[in-house]
Amino acid sequence: MSTTTRPAPVIRVTGVTKDYGSAVGLRGVDLTVNRGEVVVLLGLSGSGKSTLLRHLDGLERPSSGEVEVLGESVPRLRARQLRRLRGRVAMIFQQFELVPSLTVLENVLTGAVGQLRGPRLGLGSYPRSFRLRALAHLERVGLLARAYDRADRLSGGQQQRVAIARALMQDPEILLADEPVASLDPESSRQVMALIREIAADDGLTVVCSLHQVDLALGWGDRVVGLRSGEIVLDTPTAGLSKTKAMEIYGRVTTSTAELQLEFTGALL
Image 1 (cartoon, one colour):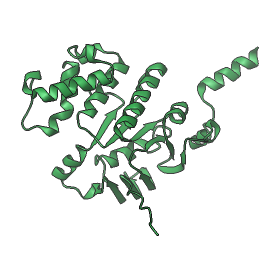
Image 2 (cartoon, one colour; image 1 turned 180 degrees about the horizontal axis):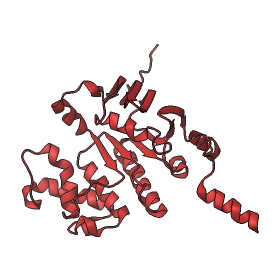
Image 3 (cartoon, one colour; image 1 turned 180 degrees about the vertical axis):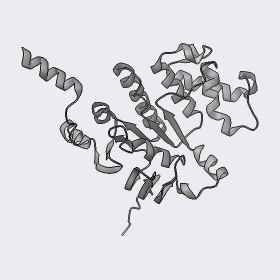
Image 4 (cartoon, one colour; image 1 turned 60 degrees about the vertical axis):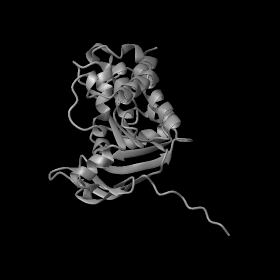
């Protein structure tokens, strides 16, 4: 009789605690993520979402427990090994982290510096094949026409699209996104999240993204992992997950400001 072997998770976090002395960032966190999954870390600011993402990228080391990414024990990696792993794991941030004075195209090309030797100054210092790749990624995120504009001339949503194109220059297997739409308006937020979802599906990317917007999480992720005070309090597929149940992640914070305003308005009428 044949047996089916399930693939090993590309991310495995086991019993991870992060102690900052007077504060605890994570408390005994266990998490596995399979290849191709789109996972949303949901919770309030300070719940441990960003801390967990930073452990996956090796920016933080756990006080105890184990973090494995793509078969590597992240805390045990030396600097060169960690750089090699980060070439397979791209990260985008809330504040975009672009160089404002550089062109959009140059910012995208910086995503490939780990694949080249020596410093790079100006577009001409990058091989033609890299420039063509960068332009293709800009076309993919809908910004080919802005390739030679300065990055600081773009809107917030456009700058985050540039950051996504820059991440794609790494040819990553995993994409980590730390509150990628927290500074964007609702419409730009929906567009950016839809773009990430589309790219993940097309490229078979594994995505772990932190959010605090419940509606976005339910409409975008395959799975929601809720954190509160450094602990996982919910881990479930989004299919069938109600907004009311998801809001329990926030403890007593069960009603959004918009809903309170709507209720207040209704009471006046």
